[in-house]
Figure (cartoon, rainbow, N blue to C red):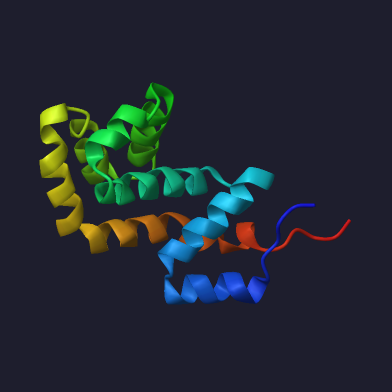
Length: 131
């Protein structure tokens, strides 16, 4: 049985721009069904942004080359080159501290970019029709 969230709950998360809870909902649903590509980028972007809590060095040590390239390509595809450039530069080990600071200084813009990616796709998170 797959997980389902009430339409009203999804709407409330979107309306309040509750990015942390949306992240949890999206990662849960992403395991059970195919969501638009934008949601995959949302997950990758938010994993990266939140890596400042444990350290950027660990993020770049742990991310696969495939996921790194996918995130970089999707950031450019969805018109977020200002993030893509910094994301790519973060791969240099000596840039991790600077990247932590950059993310903290740009936190609200990063939140807005993440929400904007999925803003028009909330219906993708609604319960699937009963068959």
